[in-house]
Length: 570
Ligand code: ATP
Ligand code: MG
Image (cartoon, rainbow, N blue to C red; front, side, top):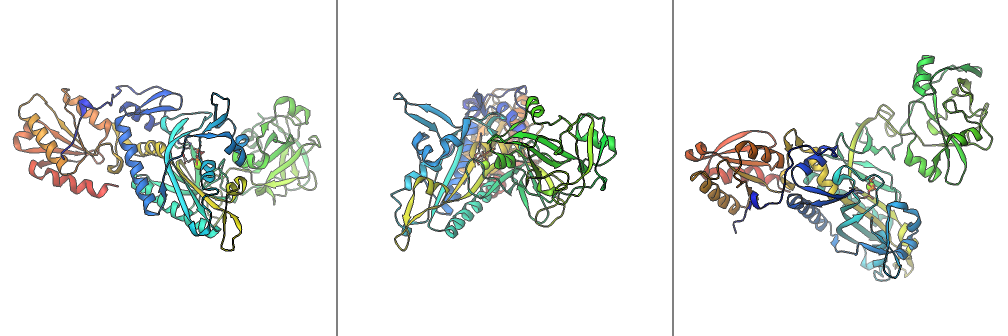
């Protein structure tokens, strides 16, 4: 059946001005093109055009999941607190978990992810190894009370996620399920038109020990990553690197006057040495209360995720604590600090023979200090954030840095949840064995934002065909004209009959307004009908991505568009 949409009937109110609150192109354009509207911080409505794109992304996901035998289902968003107690995450998840009580004051959480519910679902029902493997998934709203919801759909408090959970009898089986999902995730990115890179990742709140994230490359991405020509790629949160260091003044230990601003940059400039030859110090109080001084190569930053793994929820020392532990702000060092202070150094510094460290006296540093002789390092830990120029952990060549949007992540969980929640099956010998699990999440709404972030120009969105709300927009320039309008309707009928998804801009607006809106909405092809072209029996076809224009005779129009559009459909 021929079916097309009319612009006058589509709720897609455009904005003339850039909304002030939107920093990212995707956020700005989704608002301007009338695709999303904010309800409250981190809560957005998807208007009809955005919703069409969301449904297309979901259908790509469903197709790929069917291809690897994952079964779609749905669990409640609300989860009883008991399940979270069973897994130990009621406490661990922290304030991001949205908690609520029912009228009987029974506690619940709105699911930020659903390992608990799915593990509980199969517990006592998937009983035998013969029933395995099983992978279940759903597409559903998730809730996370993010500290800083921002960038529109990128970091919402309610957002759409596809989450899958695999249950296997063995670790090898889990690996296979994991590889299947990972392969599907790469294809999903590609089919959505995303340039994405799989990177080794930290497993965060979810846990487990092997994890990969798919990063849509974008300057505006919140995530940092490092990669190497050899194929290594990792999220900054997880990346280990071979970090080099320089030695400064090997020899006798000596206190030197360093009247500078107490920063690494000013110290290096004052001494005329590389920042790398200095040591950066961070004084923290670990979760267990231990005062700790972390020493890093001067040109590197403390990696907060690695630090959380090492120290739990830590706090930076305030001025009072610094003073109490004998640490001089801007001139901190391991020598002369209170003996209660635990000294921890980045593992990259293990072979450094001569250290330049703060003297714990304002305006002074100590050079030629030696670990093991002049001070004790209680632990060598991987604490520094990898950065461009560091050595690749695999091949040693310099790493490149890039920014990305994490659109999805796959995890090997092992038996973390099955053991905690008592989810066992009977193996070949009838023994109770915990499931080997994997979990796999795609941010559906974030994927939409990432697509727009990668596909836009000064005029608006430039949709890839596969997830465009419509494939073709017919733009009759004069809807009152008794040649143009009937031609537009005739073509709309024919093109939709040919299977093209189209919308007709039937509004009685000036040509300039229609052109600007067509570019802003960004549908892949515009079929422009003016008086002269219609009189010639031609349409002017504009390709939104390349800007190319073609005069195409009406009888050839459907074939012309299909030839270009069909191969790009997902
Ligand atoms: P981030 O590090 O960006 O906070 P995450 O690693 O905590 O994300 P996961 O637990 O891996 O997120 O969730 C799976 C997917 O859900 C993510 O890859 C991302 O695409 C999406 N997602 C997570 N948090 C949000 C959010 N606040 N808004 C929109 N999408 C999100
Ligand atoms: Mg993640």
